[in-house]
Length: 57
Image (cartoon, rainbow, N blue to C red; front, side):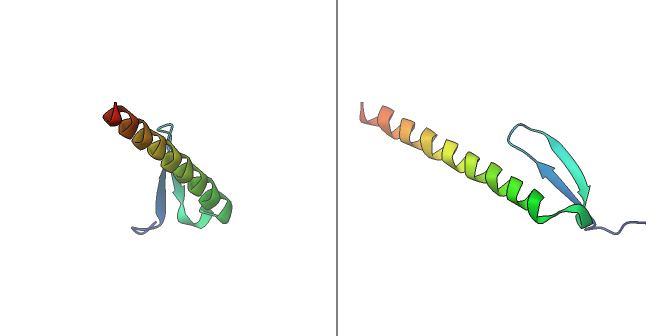
């Protein structure tokens, strides 16, 4: 029987969802998530730049 906190839900930018046993939450999977977050951050920065460009016109 698993106790609360033994599962980790992973949601990616493509909307994929995965629930994994926290024992399988590895450095590699953390690096993948960090890459996803960095990609989202870059996209948000580009959107903000585009909004600012439109406001200037």
